[in-house]
Length: 157
Image (cartoon, rainbow, N blue to C red; front, side, top):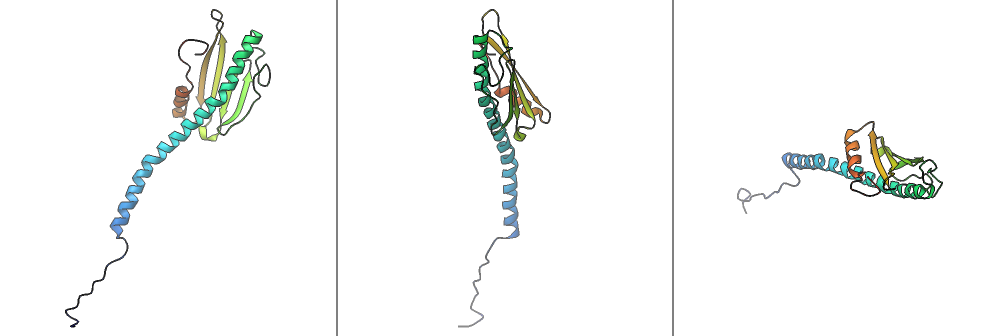
C-alpha cells in the first residue's frame, strides 16, 4: 500500500469547549429554578412541623378551659397541657394563660407564631386567633398565615 493513499482515521475523543459550555448552562438554568423551589418546599415542611407541634397544646388548652372554666390556669405542663418541647423546626414552645407561642428554628428565619384563645360566652366554644411575626422574611409570614388558618364555624377560628 501506498502511504499517500492511506488515510488515517483518527477520531477525536472527549468534548469540545462549546459542548461543555452548553452543559454548564443547562445545569445553571436547572439550579436557578430548582434551588428556590427546594427552599420553598423545606419552609412549607417546617411550617407543617410547627402546626403539628402546636396541635397537642391547642387540644390541651381547650380541655383545660372545659375543665377549669377559664384560661388563667392553662399553662404548660399543667391541667393536661403538655410540657414544653422542641422539634426539628421548633426551638421553643410556651403556654401561658392559654396563649401558645411557638418559636421557629433557624430554617424558619426568626418566625414566631402566637395562638391566642378567646372563650365565646354565647356558644361556650373557643375562638382561636393567630399571629405570625418574622423579623427577617415577610414571605415566611405570609406562608405562616396560609398554613395556620382556622376558618369556618365551631370551636376554632
